[in-house]
Image 1 (cartoon, rainbow, N blue to C red):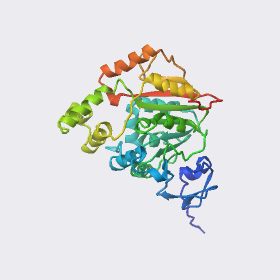
Image 2: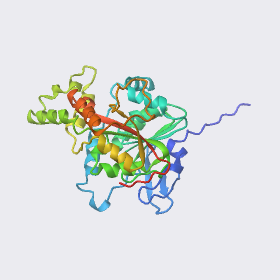
Image 3: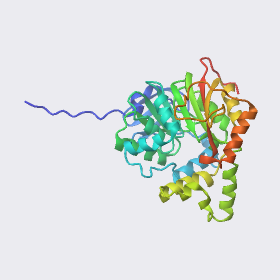
Image 4: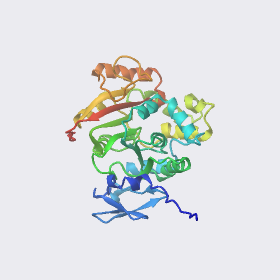
Length: 350
């Protein structure tokens, strides 16, 4: 006699990793009852939207109006970035990510069994890409629920088991301190009112000997973007063709719009230098490992070792790297990336 059994649906990543989640209000551990997430201390409850825990907590609930976080959150709710233009499967996402040397090297060099967090994941393309590996767990967090729904929708369609998403304010993390092997936040902190405070907030989530990766707009390299923004504003956007992305025939209109609004219509951004970010790292117990573009001599190659210490250069060589970014037209918005390793006894001091 044959009997039929129904197989239980696989647990979402946050269910399998509930021990690393924390209440964004008091920092205590949480539990999940199948419908909501509950703080074990202050007894606050948080809904779960289609598998996305809504763990966003404002800086100050009494003063939300005019807060930069709320302004930026509203911007991305209307203009999610990036979109899933022409990405409809794991294969097409892998092909797109593979064309970017950084994403491919990151995927290849993350240690086995790593617990990873992407802070400000947007629509979650990097989180989903990294989560395709069976031997790691990758969380993507963002304050914009619209973007997270796009991210989680793709994850569900492609059945990516080792990626998961959570709505979170990076100033009030919904994860316990020192639990992640790798925390990456690329193109995010410069859209906050306090980039250093934001860095320190997410740096606490990194394990001793773990890795942090931060991408920021460069103060010198982004002068090209600033000039284009002025021209676009003065011409009522009639000169938008001056941006190479807007002339790319492989982009559809949604992708062009997403890029244009993120680069030229954003309500808040700051710009930073290599030396400034290096000071953040060293003041908060992180050893400099590498950067993109590189500070040390030689080109960045497709065999680069991201997590091996490189020469951090001098103020002059770091400035020369920034000048090169400017002279090459501020490619990709003049974003630069720095990678660091947390000391085994690191404590924030800055």
